[in-house]
Structures are given as C-alpha cells and as structure tokens.
Length: 161
Image: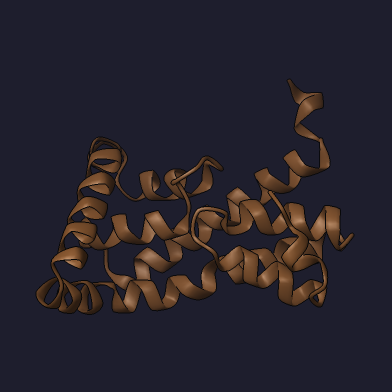
C-alpha cells in the first residue's frame, strides 16, 4: 500500500484516519504506524483499533435509516445496497446460522479483504443484531484482528509456522 499521503501527517492522526477507511481498516493502520511512523506496538494498536471502531458507531446507528432513505431516492443507491446486502448475506449466512454471535467476531477478526468491521456492521444490520450487542461483538473482533495484524507486521507469526 502507498502510504505517502499519510507520511507527512502527525502519526496519531494518520494512523487513526487510515484505520477508519473501509477495506484497509486497521489492517492498513497498524503497518503504517509501525513501519512509517515507527510508533510503539501498544500505541499503534490502540489508535488503530479506535480509528477502526469510530465510524462503526455511526454505521450501526445510521445504516438502516440512511440505506432506506437513499434506496427510496436513487436507483443507483438501491442497486448498490441490494448488491452489498446480498453479498454480505451470501458470505455470512451459513456461518451465522451455525456459530451465532461468535461467527461475527471471527468474521471481523480474520484479517482478509472484505472481512472487517465495516462488513461486519452490515452483517449485524442484515441479521438484526441489536446495536449495543453488535458494537461489542465487532469491537472484540477488531481487537483480535489488531493482535493478528500486529503480530504479522512484527514478523512474530513466521516463527510459529
């Protein structure tokens, strides 16, 4: 990933902002903090988790209202949300039926593309998980993902394999 845009920002702000972005989330924030900003492991972890979770609060609270409003007003939004919800439902349904809440934690914790807190928030909405419970489950998943990404970035996992 090209971190040049973030290289000239204050380290805490750059780490927080890149961790907020869908797809990259803390999977981009922690490596940025550790390799570009040379922050401590603990500081990079805490700021990245906070940055990753910040937009999730608003997403969980507003996803239903915003998506319904936009789908009523725009055919493009209707197609986008229909695609997003169908894709998330397809990726997550079997796991959720089998594992329940643990499935959401694992789904968010595994540091692979399209399996972070943003997608987890959409899955929580689709499956009707209450906001407070969803936030807690997503937070646990993000914390686990942060540990995994930190270990991978630091090269610790290569010694375990």
